[in-house]
Length: 274
Image (cartoon, rainbow, N blue to C red; front, side, top):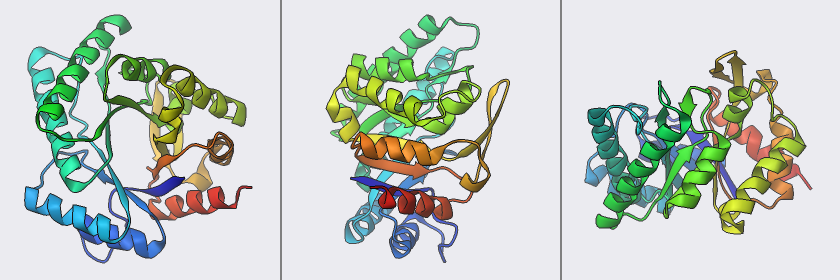
């Protein structure tokens, strides 16, 4: 089955904080929430334990998004800080009960894609080793990114997952559409993406897939901004049909500025598919 939720605390939550966000998500009928730690991981172990208990009480699954300040193919000091942020995201995410966390791997800069990819692989091995040492059981997921200057094409996130045990892809279909200037935007394209994942990583990858969806605008440099589903040219309904037809399970996170409105729209539309 697919579980649907928001990236961050629903806007309609009466009080701030992830525990209250979990309760509000369940009141709305959602069954997932992604903890958006994009500006840093700032949480005590006590708070993480309270989140874990709230998620269990309300039968809500959790994922997390690591800080944006990560670049595994940057300068040595940047990589060192990035690794620390990722290990802390995984540690706290696991303590919260999250099953997966995603992040943007970095920027190519003046490096070739191959050089950047080698550095990312080295970083991924260090992250998974660090989390294993801490006994933090959580999926480490490189996200398919929205700009061609960012490391993280479909082919790259699949290859990194195949190369490093414990690493998996986070597939942002909206990002792929924007990254490639409006391509990959119909049922056949979405089904082909899912088939490519299964071909390399096996059926298990589709049985536990971390997905991001939103409306999105793009320009010559790729992603410009996210937008509500009702405003987008991205064919999200055809994507839901592909997910249904290929019997994908896992978590679908709405990164739309409309947050829970679009998460509920995705969930409702998906459940009506036959």
